[in-house]
Length: 129
Image 1: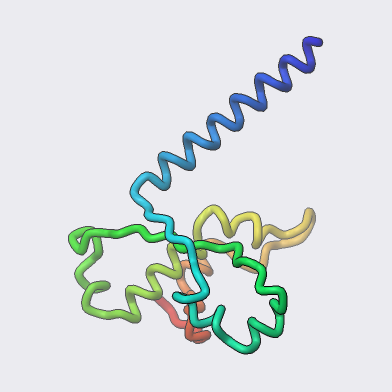
Image 2: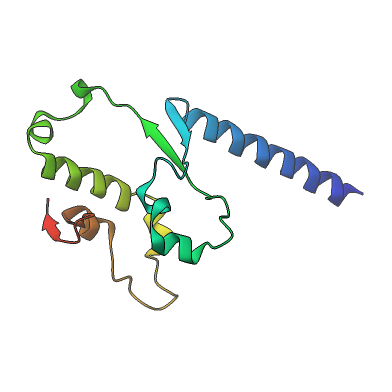
């Protein structure tokens, strides 16, 4: 019985910590459900072909508003630089650590520094920051 109580206690603490962390990190975010009326991709013939039963989408839109005063002036003046800085912040974070980790005994091909210095943006081109 001691093992079950310990597992239950650990599970409750883990779930509580995860929920509290999520609430803390997303307290300034606005989550907007995506509907077929607002997303051009969901109106396409290709999407209709791949989703013949019109199943609901399983993604949403998360918006965080950042005051202009928190954005560096050179980034405010150049949209390309702002996009590259945004891509670098997303793709060089801790979330990429797991996706770029190499199996034991091998060297990772991507490093955080490499991602920060060269970012592939949505246009598909690779540019140095």
